[in-house]
Image (cartoon, rainbow, N blue to C red; front, top):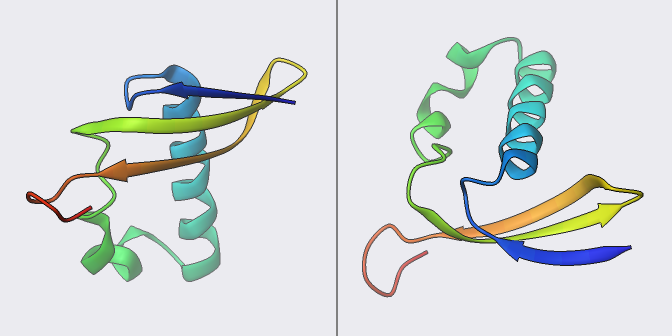
Length: 72
């Protein structure tokens, strides 16, 4: 297992985020059910990302996104 630090432009991070969106759409019914939360899940301005890599594949991630100074 490997831990790498990157940013929101990393393809493996973006792919994991899309997988999460698809999963959430399946369990709640669609994006309409998540409408109030989607605004907070955009991938713009994410500068700090940690990816866990296993056998060359990203299996988990975490990130911080600044909404305003001193608030992530």
